[in-house]
Amino acid sequence: MEQKHPLPPFTLETALEKIQLAEDAWNSQDPERVSKAYTIDSEWRNRDQFVNGREEIVKFLSGKWERELNYKLKKEYWAHTENRIAVRFEYEYQTKEGNWFRAYGNENWEFDENGLMAKRYASINDLEIKEEDRKFK
Image (cartoon, rainbow, N blue to C red; front, side, top):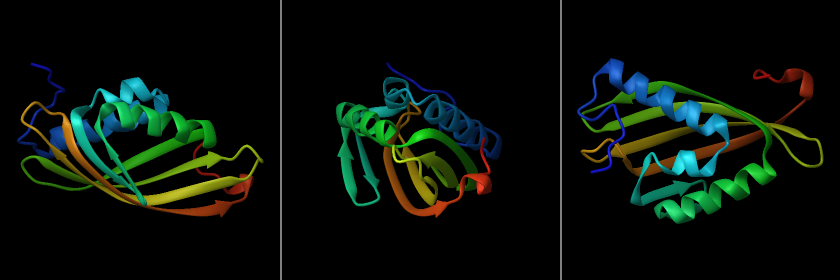
């Protein structure tokens, strides 16, 4: 059976660990690596897009990181329950045209008993920034 530690039910310590593991994976910009944290049939809502399953996750993330260059993400703990974690995040990226953006948002995560994320709901807003205003370098 495929498992991704730490497993629910989460304590504050294991929720923080899970968040750091997610941040590290996303900052790798490796769609295959990121997809391994999700169930085979994981459900996502990312802004106005709905993504279902690992195959679609890999496709979605591949396209994302082709458009969002110099990507750097920071996730912060918001709350948790037994098998759910809520995070606040922000990330910065540059477009092919050279413009910089900072994206702000919240994610709600639900995990199965094996520690794989079954549901991910993300609300995200982008703000154009000047290069000198970047936080994450």
